[in-house]
Image (tube, rainbow, N blue to C red):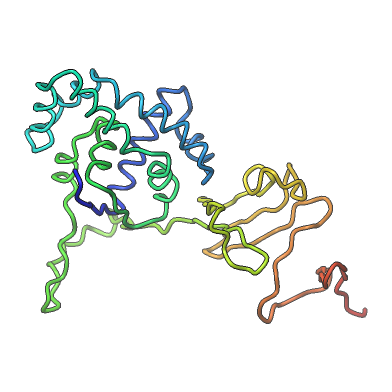
Length: 271
């Protein structure tokens, strides 16, 4: 179980959905609401790790998964585990549990929203599929990787196009934006998780941006909206304390507020 495996976007999303659905059902959450509330804070994934780990360390769950699998090297390995002594089986279960750390779960459940590929140890992939109670062999058979172009530059023949009345877009671009915490020198803070927001509109406040920062309102600080593929920021705070740093020539209009140092100025034009 020491080799590395790279999985693509389709498999990432498949595993995310299965893991989130199983976890939410076990702890009594509505899965889509829980998914929307996910942030990069590691404590969330430590809680998930505890629940997942307890599941993986339960011998009855592993035996049930073994009987569910089609014939494969993994099933053969699990059969050998089932026939081993009590101490050996317990050690093996502890290994299963150790694969799915909080950082691994954050990588899949949080960052997996936007990444096209992710790399894991084979043991991690096996543990993810075990917890999701899915057979990877079956998934790969039903979802084969696209055939890549060969070295001569040719590509596989396209499927015949369906009637226009039946056509649908193959891929709709996700409306996702990221917020990355900056240090005073404007470099990205490596100790703060990237915040990921998906959907057309999001109200930003203290809870979903920086829970310990009292300079951000707990109600509505700002709103970011996607209109026709463009992102727009609108201030929602009572004290008007939402700003964009000017780092290039920026269009301004009457009524805009300019902050210079710690002073605020209203931009106006004569009547």
